[in-house]
Image (cartoon, rainbow, N blue to C red; front, side):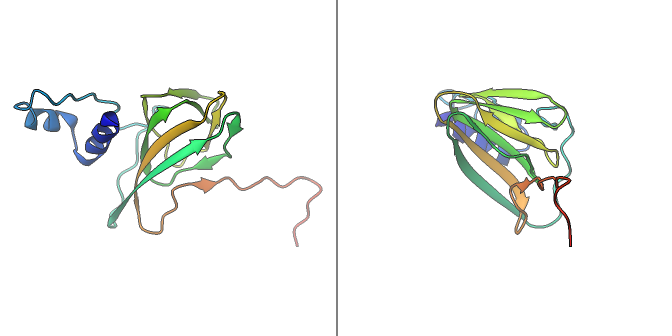
Length: 152
């Protein structure tokens, strides 16, 4: 849980070096940088923050064993902390990121991907979203129409 607090602080402070400097007189405080980047895990630069008033959302997801999430995108910057289990994130370009308990991820923004729990235990991840009011946390990919479907 202590690492989760540090991730919250990391999202609130522009640079962890500022936080570390401000705590230097408190040697009993241990700081582990779990993630700090201007890019998502696949190397794509994160977009600028919106100019509207921010809305921070913190969501705990529990993905059952052998469950594949649907293709989706995230319209806002988000980062997660893997509490337990493992989750494989796969991008539309085929890149994979295996996330294990105790690790952090800076997620893709506006790029299709999905998560898959290939393990035998639930995968628990806490995700922090830096969005705005009325912006969804995730947008599911529209199902593709087959040749047998017609539009009216």
